[in-house]
Image (cartoon, rainbow, N blue to C red; front, side, top):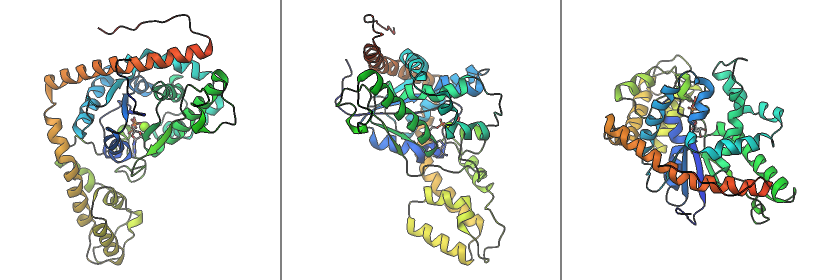
Length: 360
Ligand code: ATP
Ligand code: MG
């Protein structure tokens, strides 16, 4: 393998359903940045999964794909150190999905709490496509094709990772002869092809959206995007309903005020936040506008440098750079993905000689 590395691997990613927001930052991006050197990192853009809700808008998905890569580069993901993976360029993922679909009981997939929440939050009713629940199976393949140790994600993804762990165990038991009672950590040593990967949930596992209700989400119209302008950030924070109506000198409850969630997540000085909470609780001359102003300042401190880096990627020149990164990433990712698929088929007795993938 040209890109052989002795480091343990990480896989995680985002769906190109819009640009990245503050929830991604505290839920997963921060961990990715911190682990870039220590691990061999693969960051996947799940463009095929974006089709679950936007099959009629594939061109938009293409545009969002480019935007997400720009978001990644602006926060500091380095395509030299980490591999950026576009899902639709990795055929082994689709093939593995098929095999994995056979290892999961249908009702098990449909009971997945993340799928249920998404169906509800996105108002999909019973009109969702066959591909919608299939994406949860596909995600097992997205992950396992890289045989990673860790998957840095937000809280909502933990149910998906649990399903991935089940698939990995089952594959190892059925096709690699691993004892069903073996400990997760022992699977590879006992001949299992797949490690049983662990979810690594970020500092804030579920950042609430500006609606104060649902998790901040690209597709729920409640997000503060990393690429928002200072004016947009200000407007969005100021639009948050603080959960109660009070004057600065009246006692309030910070725990039902979503703005305090942002204070916790983005104001670095924890003593200062504790003091804000106390003053809010006691009605010690602290209006909602004040709290919001401190939060806006903290968010600006984070987003300022990100915006500056992003500005350098604007326009066609930036798009070209992103497309190059996607192609280079696909080359690197396919090496390991093809290797995993080959090994999986070998274990299944479905291997009838090597094949070569060529990317010009
Ligand atoms: P969509 O609305 O299309 O589902 P999303 O905003 O949920 O978009 P995803 O691409 O599904 O974003 O998630 C990418 C990663 O970011 C996942 O690891 C997910 O757990 C994490 N994440 C998303 N939203 C939040 C949030 N509000 N707080 C913490 N982590 C989050
Ligand atoms: Mg999501």
